[in-house]
Length: 378
Image 1 (cartoon, one colour):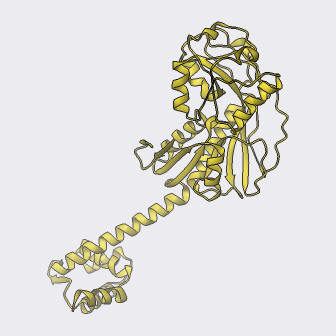
Image 2 (image 1 turned 90 degrees about the vertical axis):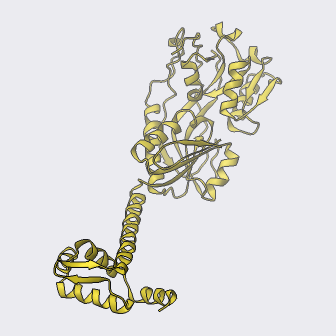
Image 3 (image 1 turned 90 degrees about the horizontal axis):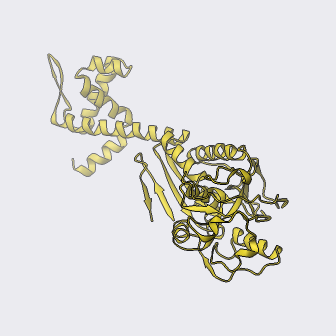
């Protein structure tokens, strides 16, 4: 019998039960013990072994007074039978882990507002609780990430929600409202000022979001509403890392969501200017494909995002007068986390409160996979 013939015979005649039987008989070295392990009668196990030997046309076990001893053929078949059994067990474990969300893959798109606190905290929590989940984070603009979400390359997009939500294939869930801050480096000549008007900053060098982004449109609107010309000495960038380096090493005035600026303010690297920005307030949340069903691992991440968003929304509102001479400790404006079908947002935003400087007091694509929790940036 050739190897080809043997393969055909085994694939037609043998079932997983036969492989399990060979593995158990090999381990037990006894028909009686193997039959008890498999909850079969002794004659049934004996008959099955003989039928397999007849099908293969060689002996798998030698019968001795001390039990069964596997032949060379028996050793080979038992080794592969155990591999098959282990692979099925691993498959069952992986399927169950995926079902309950302890493995799998989550792809998240993030805009600027979610990249500093909301998403990092949620990802860190998920990796501690479910180290087998692989997570891919892609940052970009709304126009770049939304098509990826629609076609299924992303499970969700996090960040500043659009003012008008007209896509019937998407769901928008708001977590909290976040003010926008004007920031400068520590030691900037304007850092000593306790009062400033937006008009005094027109001729300053600016670091602004890209044209067409929601935040840039709101910044431009703030100047126009104040009957001021738009800044002309401008650097335009959406790179968080680049922006932070430019702000620390130049006299540029930057525009940042509150939580994006907060960490650098606490460490004495940036100051927040005491300038009132009317109407610049972001609705931070998640965008999902309708009807909002997520794989288990992505659903676990979403639940953690809701918890973090709820905690932020319940924090005390801004109190700029309490921030002088210390690191900023103010929290965003209150908001509610809720799921709703896409429709135009009722744009009735409260005037964003001004925040004061900290007086210098210290206080891309990323993939995280497997169980190591290591990040790859590229």
